[in-house]
Amino acid sequence: MPAPRKKISYQEFLHREYVFFRAPLAPEMDFYGTIRSGNLRKVKSLLSEPFHEKRGLGVLSENHLQNLKYHLTITIALIARFCIDGGLSQSEAYNLSDYYIRQADEARTPEEISDIHNEMCIHYTKQMQSLQKSSITSKAVNTCINYIYENLHTRITLEVLASLTNLSAPYLSRLFKKETGYSVSEYIQTKKIETAKSMLVSSDYSIAEISASLAFPSQSYFTNVLKKDCGMTPKQYRTLNRSSGRMPGTLLN
Image (cartoon, rainbow, N blue to C red):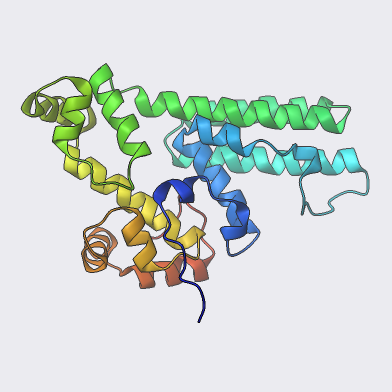
């Protein structure tokens, strides 16, 4: 009898190794999506492998340095597109891409290419991070949002958030709604559904595992919430988005 599969958590999904993906394309798409989300800590952790030592790059030129330049240019263009999709203005996204493509063109060593790649990824991520927080003015709401992102694998309540911010629950509820446009429960559920969609497309975790890892009360509840959000069951959503080859950020809603 095979050993029971280890229960997963949302945190394990965030920090998973590439072996969990179903295809070589998926880690790249997840990486671009992470930049778009403004998750600077995760982006930095994913930059451990130098770009010039990256495995699986296609041969676009017999000249190694030129080949790296071509691949970096493609990467820059894709990241710009992802960030535009995430709300960054086209002028800002394209100005950054033009700047880093020129930097790549002038590079003289593979190591320089890696340095440009890392600087570019962090620059775009910081821009997206600033964009997402620009409409949030209070420290209390920022604290709540950071806590929610780090704890989607648990049941998060207004009372817990109020305790973290030393505010009364009614006051925090009004403040959160004013600054984000969502009630606390709506915001938490929205972020859980966004993460569940990513897990459905970018991993081979079962629907039951995804439901449990995001602390939904039950698998049937998760199914109903997703169906209300996009008109599809988790199985239908996974099948349709995988078969269509859509990138995160262009998934069918």
